[in-house]
Image 1 (cartoon, one colour):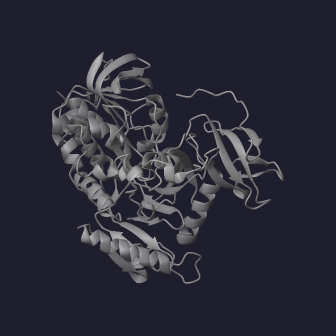
Image 2 (cartoon, one colour):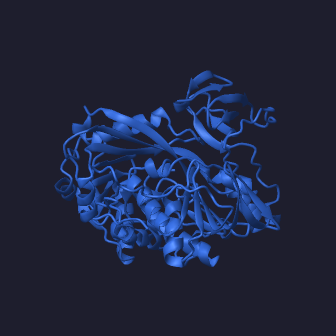
Image 3 (tube, chains in turn blue, red):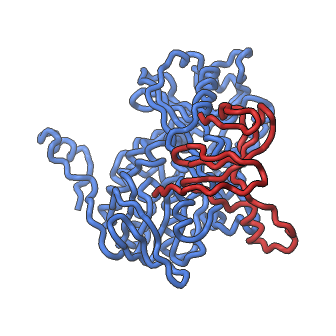
Length: 417
Length: 97
């Protein structure tokens, strides 16, 4: 049993010069068989394993990760958490996630540094403004806090935005979700890993899955770099690599994979205490607790699995950031990277059973999966445990592409796909 | 930044081109005869390969003509450029896990 993290454990370990902290999770060799194998050790996969153990009592679970925990999109996003989505289905799912975020540090006994600093979505023209107003009203009908700020209100809430009338991207107004904010992305992976491990889940890193064993339309197990692992159920949560996994299982998905870029600047003193998003010009800015500006950019226009991103995308975003925040023009960027996101035609995720019995996919989160991490794990665990979609996940099955019941969230997804 | 060899204008920067996604997806000849799931497959299901992809590009800021490209989605190397309607060239598939 792990020791709880607390003020007292901190003080006790300080006496030992912090040299005696136990490891946060074990690194066992995989057993020959499990009830559930989760493929993918990012936030969503680890959350799935955690809620399987906590909510459904299924602890004979392994999380198999190709690289290291949170080394994919969990460690590559811009850490923004919000729930102001347009449609009822999305509002319910993302709001459920946001409510879990609000108690997550206590639940996991791990500080995920969730900071509800407020998320602004800017409107630059009349069309943006109308769409924003529509979304705000839709949010409020769904019980999600969302309010409209006019230009003066934006200036008061976030003084560093340039509101002079001759700017290239005039700001006419913004929506504000005060409960939105940021969280420490690595801590989310580590916290879920530690909490899942405490409940008996095995976490296996550096172990790529190379194939599935399927007979009579039913999953039997997974082939991995550490040998064959038998599994009653297999849950695939591999984001950008979902098509690769589906291909191994013999079907195709309605997604395409593209790199989504982000950058951080050199660290500076506190200058921006909220999250500013502008979907229209591809500029998302917040400031990390270390002082770096965290800047989110757009996706490449062509399919790619290189975790880099294309230079024109970087240039476009930085140009927009410099227009909106003239005082950032002399900032230097420290790092730039890309994460491979799998984008659905309707910019909504897939949480679904598949043509193979006992094989479940949670994918298609596109450019906005981080905010949903707890909710995604919650509903996916329920779907796996009951072999039946959780009510919140029911609209997100693969069947929606056949029935035509698409959930078009291109507007609220903010990054144009 | 990709350097794409337009068959009509020569090598140009990626910015001059627009993307047309996967190539060789044929519109069903008789859509009325199709089941919903076949129609969904035509509309939505994609190969999305990690490895060689066959895709369409158009030189929007140049000759404005369409052509096909075979490209590795990991190394981003452009392996072949060939005209619309032509059969894809035989290419070695790199294996990525």
